[in-house]
Structure formats: structure tokens, C-alpha cells
Image 1: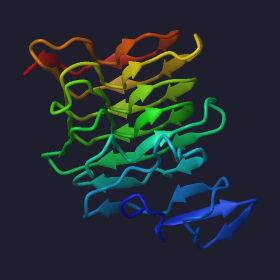
Image 2: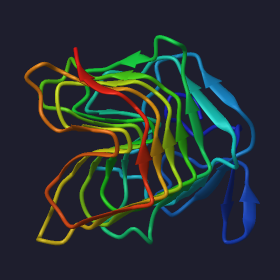
Image 3: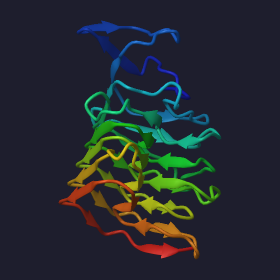
Image 4: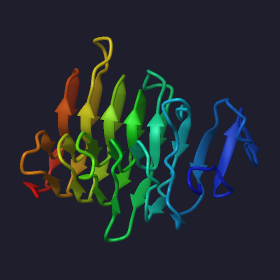
Length: 231
């Protein structure tokens, strides 16, 4: 992946056959995996927007993506906007996200180490080690794994090791779980936060696992070791 564009570092499969490249005009489902560790040297543009959501599967195979900066926009994360209502249609797994010691600073409204905005997805076995400072956004949502969820989202066996800084709605795993049409369940299972969580002195909703929820939420077998405080 280079600046949100799918490149040779990824091998794509469709209907069981390996394909070498996908033109930008292609709109079908493409399941992908990361073949090796990669570092993004330019400003990263997250994969997926509200008008062009990522709705396939991505398997990091235990490899890492290192991000040194993120392009300005509404979303900050490896994936910007993912999902299509159901957790069964989109999956992201086995990925490690890293950064330099300084991490990234963003004014994006939605920010997450793995996914900024989930509109229905399953995220499993992912680790975030990228420090994110989203304090420039006064109405933002920040999570170590996912910043904001709406529609069914399942997060399991994930960990955040990085420091997270914002004004409010900050969680070591998820920042804010919202509701739509009275049904947008969130399930978090076997997740751990070790990174420190820092909100503003007048901020609200700062937590080691889930910052804030407005929907039916199940949290099981999770633990927080990260410190919580205010800047």
C-alpha cells in the first residue's frame, strides 16, 4: 500500500485466482493480504471513504505497516471508512500498525490506529503501536483500534500499546460507539490496552477500553493497564 493506493506489496485474490493489479475503476470485492512489512514514507491517505467504503477482507498475516504521517482529511488511520452495515461483509485481521516515537498529529474527526470509522466490520488480532494526537479536533473520536463505530462491529483479540491524545471520546480500543435505527451493536472481546489515554482538562468520555457508547455494547475478557489523565 502506498498512500491509500493498492500496490505490489499486496497480493490480491478473486474467486481463488491471484491477480496482479486492480484498476481504479474496479468496484467488485477484492480480498487482500499483506505479504511483508512496509513503511509509508509519504503522508498516508487512509483506505476508504463514506462514498467509497472498504467492504472486503484484509489479512495482515502478522506483518506491520509503519506510518510516519497522515494526510489531512476527515479520517486518520490505516483504514478510513470500512463496512456495509453487517460485520460479516468486512474483515481486517492480523495487522500491526507502527509509527515513529513522535507518532502522528491529526485534526481528523475520526481517528483510529487500525480503522477510523466502522460502518459494520469484524476486526481481529490487530495491534496498534502508533501514537495518535487528535487534540486539534474539538469534536473528534479516537480509539487505539477503532475511532468510531456505527452498525454491527465485532472487535476481538486486539491490543493498543500507544499513547492516545484527544479532547473527548477516547478509548484504548474504541472511541465512540454510536447507534443508527436502534440497532448498532458493538462487541469487544479479549482486548487489552496498555497505552496512556489523555483527554483535555474539560473533556469527557476517556476510558481504557471504550470511551463512550450510545448503543448496545458487550465488553468481555478485556483489561486496561494504561494510565488515564488530562493534558
